Image 1 (tube, one colour):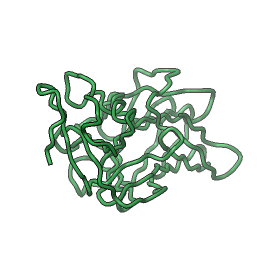
Image 2 (tube, one colour; image 1 turned 90 degrees about the vertical axis):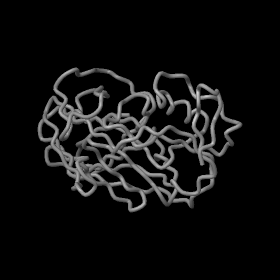
Image 3 (tube, one colour; image 1 turned 120 degrees about the vertical axis):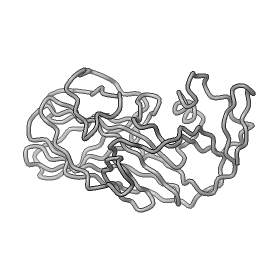
Image 4 (cartoon, one colour; image 1 turned 30 degrees about the vertical axis):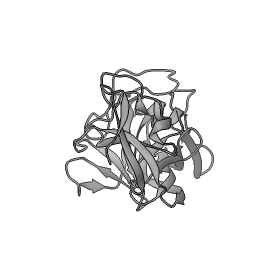
Length: 256
């Protein structure tokens, strides 16, 4: 859940785990300056030892707010809707769905949302680029999908990850074509919070994010994955059934 940069080698590899629960050792209530807009509310950073750069990450959407509202939050299951228990009750339709779905063996469908926090303990820290590494591609499978549509385009800056093309780009959220390579500097004593949206339309993908990080002239690759295993995002195609939970009827309703 943390990564260390630097070391005797001119280039190395470290790894960051995006876990459902982030252990918070220290919380910095001020001084956060995400790229572009001030995005998200998850501004806790794990700080251990005297490393020049510490990174914490999460893909648990129950634990942070993806600013701008995701277009949809859907999960795919190998089970039929008759085998799925009701989702947890909440005042909002999509609250507490991530933990519930993944505890039942569900995986992200079409989209995976996440957030990475980078805290610099020293000067001379910069992220030179980001890319996506496709660990495994599988043919789409017909599965049952449940979810909730939030509506609206994403209108804030974020790291856009196209899993079909294996491309990661920085989007300002101001237009579909407003993208550019991802890079930023992290000032000493500050935290940069970067949100990402990964999506797949044609394949089931196991993947992770690779950041090229420079600390005092030393470049290191930082691998960000899901608690030691690749992120999993299922394709939007080949949906057998799509259901939403209707609390007033206390049942799953087939929409398509």
